[in-house]
Image 1 (cartoon, rainbow, N blue to C red):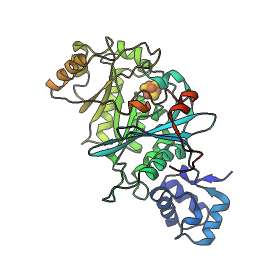
Image 2 (tube, protein in one colour):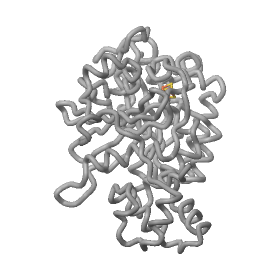
Image 3 (cartoon, protein in one colour):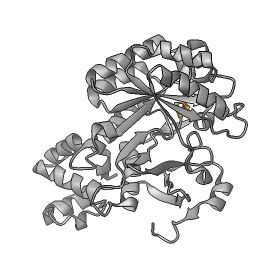
Image 4 (cartoon, helix red, strand yellow):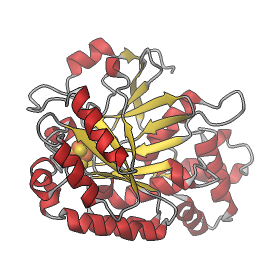
Length: 364
Ligand code: SF4
């Protein structure tokens, strides 16, 4: 089987070329072609010597996941469904905002962590995505979105918040992050790439050492009793350990803060006393909060907190001097809103009705 060069970060590609007896600067050239130019054909890489191109054609390939479908919502949100085999697809979502364009990237097919309010968690775990399948999401979206009239990339931010727990697929995710940050590839700044974890404490420490991108933590509860119930990994890594890991992480990125994500579940975690407990919990962690109105899905067993409850909760946090955002619900008409990413993937009938099939037309 041919080696997929999309699986390599720059260090790995450099090593690969060295092992082939080739000059190591070739790695930078090929990174540029693959990621900045969106090229998957070695013959089109015109500044690479013909002999090397022939060698690459025989032994390697740039294999991006194939595109099953693409869709655009009326608010400009876009979604791509990529084929990762075994009848499964992973979804990538682009969310346009006034001052940025954010791509939400998946790291696994399904997820093993079974957070109770999450439709992905309800599907169970299928497998980890390869580095090529992770970076392939950015590859496709970048190719589709291109650059602005000012020649800036439309995708300015990446959040690893799609399907899966990224830190449970550590090596592949870190390689993909390194490609995102690499000036020879996407050149995104470290603070514009955010990894969201449910709280795998040892891997948070490893990430700090390997690639300290911005960190978001799916907190969702102000105490262990509630978190044990809705985020089961908390039984293994309780809040005291998680908060200590957050503090350690910021030692590697001292001017940063942790973003705590908090899904607002009616009657579960949304009372004023929960907001006060939360302030106590994070008292010595530089942070901001992102409150997420829950998106109900069939048989979830949870409801969305009322607007009044969300407002009161937000005010308690703000009055204590914390920065709080409330996530806008985006892309509702294409099921791209948070927590719905995987919800429809296996519902092929509905997907066929709703999605624009582009495979036949062969164009984006
Ligand atoms: S919230 Fe994240 S970690 Fe929890 S089940 Fe869903 S995808 Fe997995």
